[in-house]
Amino acid sequence: MPDLTSHASPSHASPPGRAASDIPASSNPTAIPLPQTEAETAQGGANQDSDPANNKGVASPGLLDSFLSPVFTPPMTPGGSLNPTGLLQQSQLSGVQHTTAPTKLLSQLPNVECIVRARIPTTNGAEMFLHLYHNDIDNKEHLAIVFGNSIRSRSLDRVRPGEGEMDRMIRGAYVGKLRPGRVSSWYDEDHAEASERGKQGDDAGHDTGSSGETKNKKLAQSPLVRIHSECYTGETAWSARCDCGEQLDEAARLMSSPHETLSETISAEDAAAFDANSPGGVIIYLRQEGRGIGLGEKLKAYNLQDLGSDTVEANLLLRHPADARSYGLATAMLVDLGLGADSNPDGIRLLTNNPDKVRAVEGPNREVVVQERVPMIPLAWRTGGKKGIKSSEVENYLKTKISKMGHMIQ
Ligand SMILES: Nc1nc2c(ncn2[C@@H]2O[C@H](COP(=O)(O)OP(=O)(O)OP(=O)(O)O)[C@@H](O)[C@H]2O)c(=O)[nH]1
Image 1 (tube, rainbow, N blue to C red):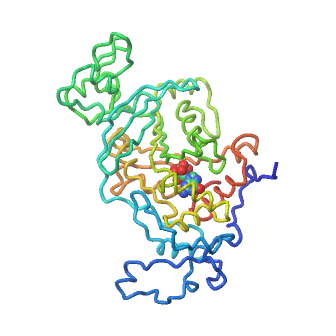
Image 2: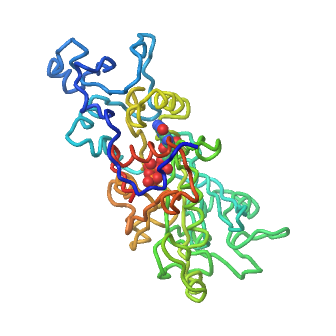
Image 3: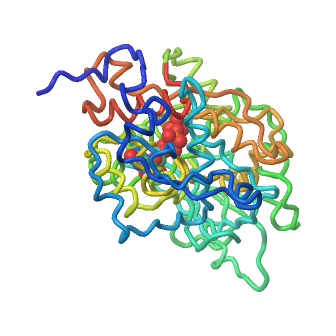
């Protein structure tokens, strides 16, 4: 077993020789000539030196010249536009602290609609409601994993023309619990729960019980929210290259037993009081695999990483942005779930180390308020290496997040 440092206190110096700005172009045979920016083209070409060696490109030790083969076709980043010149200019700024472009905010939130919701009993005993969304900017099935009973989707609860009670129950627009023989989506006999709101066509509230009872209830704490991007390798294929699977598990754990926090466990009495007012939690699961470049491109990036690049360099070498994601859909889904500033002015607590995510999730007009950022410290760092992921790859992945993407993991 190699001597791994994932549990060590992080002192996160950039890996030597990795930063593009640190390597003189003349001594960098693998520098890739970059296309002109639109502005440069308009000016007749600011970058008129035809010698590729004089263009600073992405330095990746160990890459062969053949990488520059003319058969290499730069891919399209799904749903994104690419300006590698701009990205690299940022990476060449002094200190290489935050080398990625800030996440672009859409000027307007997309429209989202919750199509169906279903109760999922989970293997650890907790229960959650899986919400599947459609939207008007892509054809993907983005998800909201909702813990607790106080968070409901407005678009799901809205009455649809011509639908009957069975239709509503089948698509998950019911209060309380389903059981054989139940006939009303609005009234749950066992729990004496009725929602008048939906019947009246009022989509402004988010109560689950008798009308008005929970609508303006002051919650003990703001709801916990995690915006998670799909990672097939880390969540399903047991990859130790990243900590995505661990982060998803940890977010679910914190939301299903909200009195367990990262730092303390509160008394049983306090826990009961907390549960009575539990704000619940939401994991917004966005289908932006590989930071938005897709699984195929991420696998190429893995091979580049094995050839010596870090995670940011590998994306740039493949002509993708370091991070091609956006969060407008997440903001719109949170608003639909009643966690927007209009109905939840106290805001949310966002589980993340990513500063871009905090700004981006708030939306172009602060449609969502992030009241507090809750850090996600890797399990191996918190337990001195006893638990969590141990690999040199995950160590490099986390180091690059800190040194090049400005992540706040301490
Ligand atoms: N391109 C690329 N994407 C990766 C790599 N490793 C993991 N990912 C993707 O990174 C994304 C994980 O990001 P998130 O879990 O949202 O986390 P984050 O934005 O890094 O920040 P946190 O909220 O602090 O976790 C997923 O889409 C993964 O598929 C990699 O080596 N290259």
